Image (tube, rainbow, N blue to C red; front, side, top):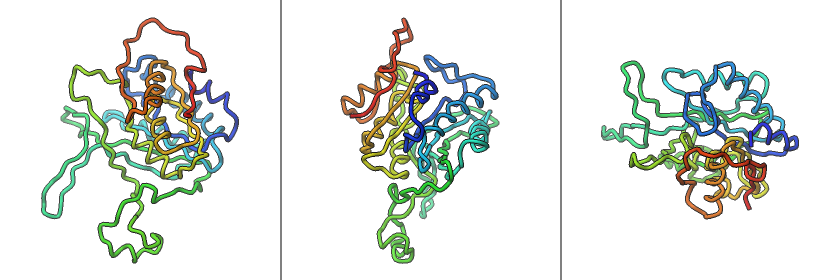
Length: 285
């Protein structure tokens, strides 16, 4: 089911948390979606579905929006967030999903970690990160900052900073290094052309504050990484939409089987099967 149609069936202020990653309008080859609109068409479409997100989001809810770009068109995430900020949401936080990073140690050694898509260009450098925009209605939504915290490297800071309560755990900050799994063999088919790792959604759930009665939504479900994160974190109720039934089938099977995360080959597009709301909308047990 199209997410706009699906969300219109949902009551006002019924969702605590939205974690999603819509198509980026970069010409990615999806099975049932044209990812090559004009800029105005894309921004208008995003304003339409984001308007429904705002309507069904609770006043203290969080909307985590993962967006990427390409070197030749780097303004896509910024244009979209300016459009949303103008009339729909307050940009409360901006997180950076770091896919790959190289750091120099105290001994002078350079260590590289993570994965990236190689770029052959004499004009652009390789893009190793994406944005996760934290949008809210008022900018005052409380967060559980240390739910994804990290230990202090300098333990003297434990007593120095009163807000830690004497615990060896500090706020991780807005740079999230989360590597994604790669396809090692060219013979293996990607189940979905553009997914975020399950751990990215886990971070969003935890920092918002997870509780058993949390109600979560992903308007662009794909093969269900956000759904798997919801189940992993103990989210009380999850709803996801996607226009591709095969993607939803993969998501459902992964949830039911308890796989580490959704993985499966998607059959080539062929004869269309009838889609129903029952097939496109599902809840975790």
